[in-house]
Length: 81
Image 1 (tube, rainbow, N blue to C red):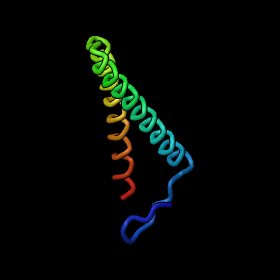
Image 2 (cartoon, helix red, strand yellow; image 1 turned 90 degrees about the vertical axis):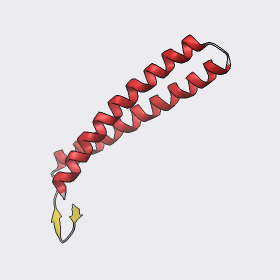
Image 3 (cartoon, rainbow, N blue to C red; image 1 turned 180 degrees about the vertical axis):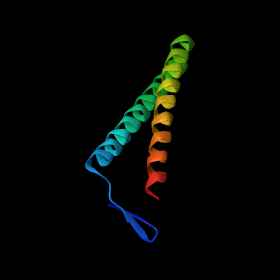
């Protein structure tokens, strides 16, 4: 159940499960992006700029996926309010 101003919206079990899974997807991709950005920094420090570029591109891909999932989550939350 979610409080929305003066009213309440009861989430179905399916809606709740979808929301939980979406948050897990977002978190997993943000963690992967962070890991790849840290690898890129390490590669730059080692002056291996080609590997750094690859790690950066992979990180950006994870960020795009996380951002898309966040947009879906935002839509779901606006439907609750």
